[in-house]
Length: 144
Image (cartoon, rainbow, N blue to C red; front, side):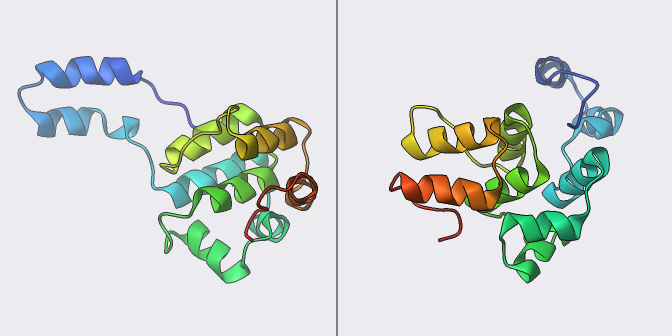
């Protein structure tokens, strides 16, 4: 998971008192989030995963998934981000972080669909197995 040197609170505190935001931005350039495709690339490297295999296991349209990884598609839906996360074998904390990173809502256990996804992640189910679980309980499957 991507780590930053300063907490968000530290950045807020500095920014509130900064007279020159350009200087602040230059000093803190390493603290800014990467575009989603660059973060996904870092995850692949960190987890020693092959992009083609993750795409295949995600169940996403191959061309569309390659567009996500190349940065041509910047705002994939929550379900598509979740499919990639599950295909990467991310743990729940990593999935929640990726969802926030992708500017999507985190999984919420009071939502029935989300609760099943949380359970699937904890059980390390594949996307296909997760779809089977969702379908068996009358929920909308991934990428339906």
